[in-house]
Length: 99
Image 1: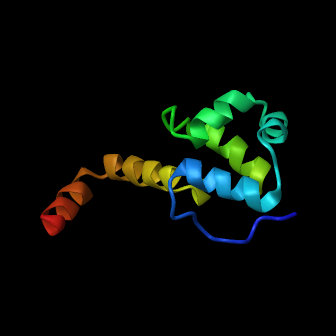
Image 2 (image 1 turned 60 degrees about the horizontal axis):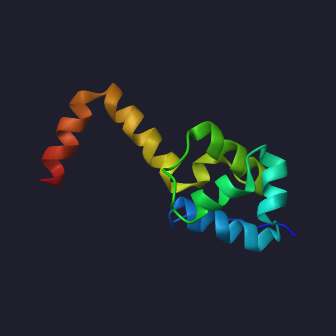
Image 3 (image 1 turned 180 degrees about the vertical axis):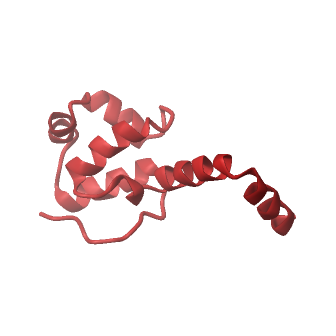
C-alpha cells in the first residue's frame, strides 16, 4: 500500500513517521530492515524519546517510507537554519521584521 501523497508533513517527525507507517502498512520490524536501523531505535524516534536524528538517518527513513527527507518538518527547519547561518544579514533583517 502506498502512502497518501503530500508535499510536506505538518506534524513533528515522530507523528509523521507513525502516520506514514500506518498508511503504508509497514511495521517497525520491516522499517528497521529497510533502513538498517533497529526497531527499538525507530520506536524511540517515533515516540520522542530520542532527539531528532541526523539528516542522513531521516533520509534513510524517508526513503524506506517513500518520501524525500525534506518531507519532514525538522529537516526543513535544519535547511533554513543552515541557510540563515550562511547569511547573517538576512538573520538580522528577519529578526527586526519579527520583532
